[in-house]
Image (cartoon, rainbow, N blue to C red; front, side):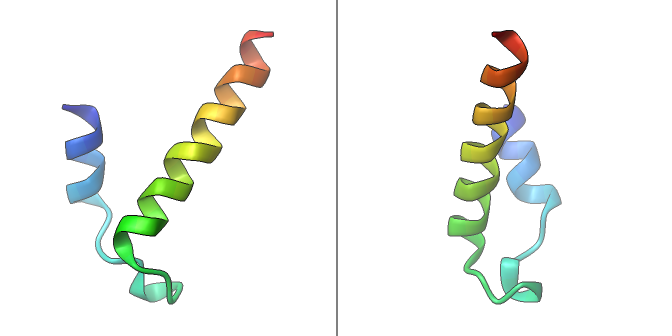
Length: 40
């Protein structure tokens, strides 16, 4: 549910020139990496 909510809250990545889907994938990847660093 949370990924769906986030995907709908963030409009297109056109502001940065990136496609929306890829922009959300990058946010997801970097968020996971940051969380793993905090846990260790």
